Image (cartoon, rainbow, N blue to C red; front, side, top):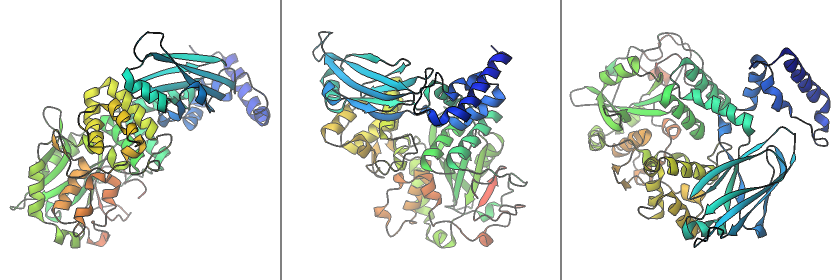
Length: 499
């Protein structure tokens, strides 16, 4: 229902009055509202630009505030709405079960306004739940029976993890509105992905002059030349946007060129969708691959060609590269090692508010919703790191704790190229290309010290393997563009960000 002119005028007057006169006294006087709380009452053209500046899709990520355990070890923190909060866990046996259950006590106070609220997620390795608090008082959350001795012992020693939705109800709903279009195959989705990358990565998107699709001469392309691909709309566009955000890369997918003994050009790619809708490793004729990307791929891919430097091309063992490609052809895309390539340190690889606690809670949620998906994405890989087999995520978290190995440390254990998963050797898009480079001799003489499954796409395109002298690029490369690039932008109308 539309707001009346009087309510809009009244809300606007309150915002202006508060911002102009009462802000210096905010710490001393609790207002009956916060300026943000009345933004929805303002006209859309006024409120949405302000909301956009305050909140974004990243606000969907909860922020870890601590772990609540026994009443003898009460935790305290400052919330987004309530500035003074305490929590502890009461262990009891009201159900009469072997290990009983528990009650989480949360006392919230010192709200900054009368209209705000705090939203929380609560997690153990065996459960995730949520609640919200609007009133200053002690609240309780019943946890029910513990899932056996493992959960009972875990909560006794580690507590219940508490996550705050920093943006509150309004900001979280606004963040949902921001995330939804990232995955839509529309102009709205494309502009949303571009806006996200501009806001969170400082990425620039400058339009290129035509032609937006390059007339490529295959005679100028060689085995080992690298393809960096960026999709900015649809399902893969949204996924790649989030991938770019966490890894710092300006590309979200990769492929590689191969030429056979008869001079025919092929493209090797991990993540090509087959007729059954499965993402697999494929080696495709160049004409077929290019036809799809230009005329059928609705994710609007931006494609850059990075030719190998002449010195690296001279080292490239084409026979070994083909042997590797053929050995991997038809295998599933390497989901097992997808997320681990960008986590190298305990806390330096996460863009705020992401951290290892949030990663663990997201994994726990997915483990409940789609256990098969979770097992494919991380359970088997985490078992590899522990030297165990068949443990599900809760058991992995408990086993890691038993060994004195924190989960954030477990995530940093490097992926090994020679690990074999239940569906064979695993290779994400970039791991497939770099493993080929490794087999072809480009990492010699230190190839035995290189684990390419630890490389992100950004790590790959920053290698000193590629041509850096634009004068040696093919004449058709970046035709008509007055900006000199050290590589060839061969498809679409934006230059690579920040070039």
